Structure formats: structure tokens, C-alpha cells
Amino acid sequence: AYPTSVLVAAAGNDEKPIRNAPFFPAAYSFVLGVEATDPGGGYASFSNYDQDGPTYSGYNEGYNYAIRAPGNSIYSTMFDDTYASLSGTSMAAPIVAGAAGLLVWQNPTWSKEKIRAQLVQSASGVSDNSTGLLNIYSALTFTPSPVIKLVTGSIIVGDGTGDKDGKVDAGETITLTMTLRNYGAGEATGTVATLTTIDEYTTINTGSSSFGDISAYATNTDLADPFVFSV
Image (tube, rainbow, N blue to C red):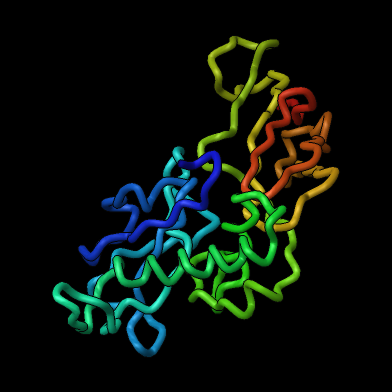
């Protein structure tokens, strides 16, 4: 389903942070994992949650939950033509799925990654260490922008001119490559990163590295243009 669809899943109701127990499929980086909120907009007491926010992951695989939505006492249909108020992240996820569908209808040429990023980036209260609360009006009117972050675990140290042990040692010239991800809905064009140091024993030989254009939720690595420094 992923090649053609925006995937939305409930984050689970175990009251656990993603660092301790990621809940799948909601935790996958290509899925919009939805946490539940109480009537005041804070985390529902039962909801799993991502304490690192939607643009950082403590996992090399990039596990995240992406957004929050109402999930407490949601009036819904039941069997035999009846209705009841139910609570859970499974009540929050359909609200986000509906918002995604509305955004697709308004922007039929947008990629699924851009739809995802627009919902996350336009959410109320979103920050580097907190998911935001779904804001459908904002999602429909928000002007997208790029949000570039380092992918956890992607830094590779190359010491081909030294003892080749993959570590930085005195007297070596080091190449440094890494992967960046664009978590924003806007495309990052001509992305350039800069390496600096405050260490008097380190000399930056190549302090600028080009990552090119990075579209929404895409990644790029500077293998062809690594940073270089000497120790």
C-alpha cells in the first residue's frame, strides 16, 4: 500500500514511550503514527507517546510517532445500529486519516510524503521534542517549508589514510559522511551543510558539503562530497 497511499496507524494504548517499546506499524518512519489526546489537548493517560517529537528518533531505523488527535470519549458507531463513546488511539487515527484524505483532495498532485509532512508540520504545538495536535485548518492553509535533520546513526568516519580502524586518531586525515532527511513539506533545494570545530588540534580541510535537493521525507547522503578534517 505504501507506494500509492498515506499510511495512518494508531500508536497503541500501553502508556509507554517509543524509546522503551515502539508500537508497530505506527512507529515505522513511513507511517503516520497517531497518539491520542484528552479533551484538553494533552496526552490521554492511556496513549503511547513519542518523547522525542516527530523529527528525531533514538533509533537508527527512524522510528517515530508523528501526530496527536482526539481519542478520548469519541462518539462512534457500534453493532446493531447503536452508538457509544469509545477511547483509544484507534479512535484518534481515523481523524488523521480523514484529514489526510481532505488534503489529498485539495492537492491531488502532492506526493504522499508531502501530505504526511504537511500534516505533521502544521500541527498545533509541534516542536523538536513534542508531536503536535492535528490542526486541519492549518494543514489546508499552511505554507510548507523544509526541515532538515541529521538521520540518527548515519555518520560514517573514513580514515583511509590512517590505520583504517574507523576511528579518529591523532595524525590522521578523516572523511566524514552523513545522511540528512527533510521532515518538512517544502523541498530543500541546493542543501549545503557546514562543519566547524572549537578544537585547537583539529583542522577543517573541507568544511562545506553539498547534499543537493531533498524533497519531503526524502534523504540524501554526501558520499560524493564528504567533509574532510585532520587531527
